[in-house]
Image 1 (cartoon, rainbow, N blue to C red):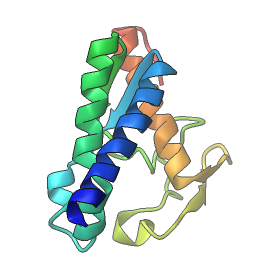
Image 2 (cartoon, rainbow, N blue to C red):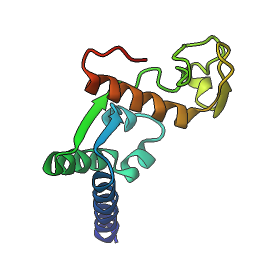
Image 3 (cartoon, rainbow, N blue to C red):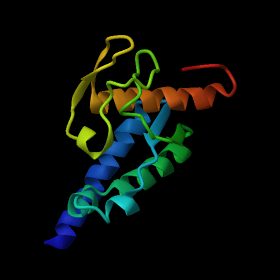
Image 4 (cartoon, one colour):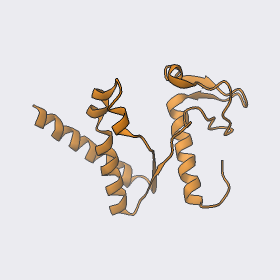
Length: 137
């Protein structure tokens, strides 16, 4: 049964990464340290998700297809306002902040869903890297 689950995971990762690479010219991911996550209380779900395998497959397929693949620093990506670029006092902080799924920027009033905001910030960081010296957020 374990081999069947492993094969299914590999198949899903293959299909998902193939689709991503086919439909994007550049892919940016946060520098998630899955080795560190394995040592936390969510170790089983981290291993079950196959984060490392997903990233490895994505990087390989991007390289083969000539698609830009960049790993960017995801520090403060959930806390930085993707609308104005501020790191406001109203942001969710620390371990307690992980339970806060939605927050409002005290600087510009933008309402953010935590994971969507992080994805926007990671995308912006990736675009900045590509711009290479052109000032950006």
